[in-house]
Length: 166
Image 1 (cartoon, rainbow, N blue to C red):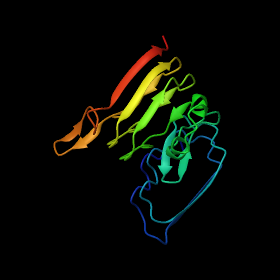
Image 2 (tube, one colour):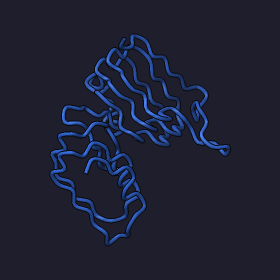
Image 3 (cartoon, rainbow, N blue to C red):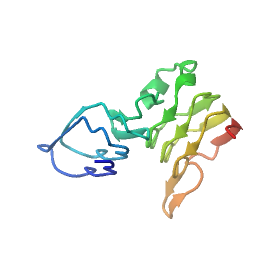
């Protein structure tokens, strides 16, 4: 099994259960369990995993050497520690109510799909990102009555990417 994009999203009921273990070839489980109402058991390693993705409200799948910058980590206020972050998981700050200020993340490689989707507060994302290789689909977009809109839920937000990889 290599991919299970959204496979169990909104599937099953409270009595459903999924047990994942030793899936050496799994590369992507983006949104696989976001609204799964049952129980989930996950046992790695997932040696081939490629993206940093939010699988459930409490579970992030990431490559073996990744250091995901999660909402919990951000809210803990360890701004100096953010420098170690290599990725921001998909949907991590989805509909986030507070302000987000991230600057100079020298090890950040990837901002995943919908990472700041529909963020309500001011998003400031600026500075040096020398290893940044990918910004995912609609990473900084917002939902409007007319569909997906490029830009932010808050017009005060801004993205300034300086010192990018060649």
